[in-house]
Amino acid sequence: MPKKILLDIDPGVVDALAFCVAMFDSAVDVVAVTSVGGNVPAPVAARNLQALIEFIDPPRFPRIGMGTAADIDLPIDFRNLYGESGLGGVLLPVAELRMQHPAEKVICDTIRSDPENVMIVCLGPLTNIARAFIRDPALPNFVRHIYISGGAVSARGNITPCAEFNIYADPIAAKTVLDAPCTKTIVPLDVTYHLVLTLDDVDKLAGTDNPAGQLYRGMLLPVFRAYRQHYGIEGIYVHDLITYMTATRPEYIETEEIPCDIETSGTITRGVTVFDRRDKPEWKNNIEVVTTLNDAELIIPNIINLLNSTAEKISKNNH
Ligand code: RIB
Ligand code: CA
Image (cartoon, rainbow, N blue to C red; front, side, top):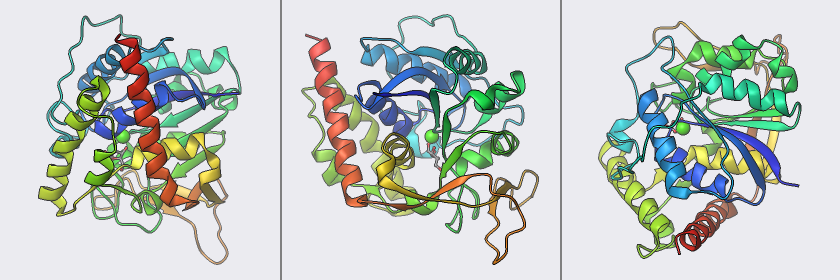
């Protein structure tokens, strides 16, 4: 039975690729997708989500919800990596803005309509999920599981020296989600830093004779250049794709329960995920942390296969 998932994304190139995989992945049934500000401001994320869904034109449309800016809207994003549009060199057309349902309402309605069956996969800041939990305080009891792309146990940060981007962008929302009574798994930078997408991997993707192949390359190639310029790395991190794979294929992961809290107000430690790893921890366990990736060398090839299978299906739809 495919797993029912609600995907919360801030597209962003890698979020967009995770969305492309999910929409045609036979392992899941994507019942809803919501956009959130993060890699790009919230209105751009909403536009990108709508453009992507029009491009993919899936056989069955999920519910769509659009997020608005976080209450503590920080002037940060990752447009230095993902370009002004957030989608690398690509600006996808949008036919017409649909009725925009608020993301938090879509989250509440989706979970309430199928209690304990829908898993939430969060690939951006936790603004929308926190808002849904504030709007409907009993909601966490009906969520099957939440997977979160974010945080760092001992790894270096990726937006400040010690903070991970998604938690840093809205630490108060992250703390609201962390404190909610539901099963949560966090996929921290400690594991996602280990896998890098290379240009050789891009060569294995569908070619430019395929619309999705064009999209993948148009989005990815400028990000390779940005990584080279900003970080001096020949490859790109694909944190959100790894989170998606681990959420939908738990055989890829080992987890450990570790008590966690979030620094919401520090000046140089804002957004840091603090784990109680003392010999005798005094905090209570509140989250599962992915500590190991099993068969890690298979994950990127599997992602490439899934992207190519999406490309094939999109191409068939177009003929
Ligand atoms: O830290 C990882 C996050 O930052 C991901 O969600 C990705 O979108 C990046 O911008
Ligand atoms: Ca993201």
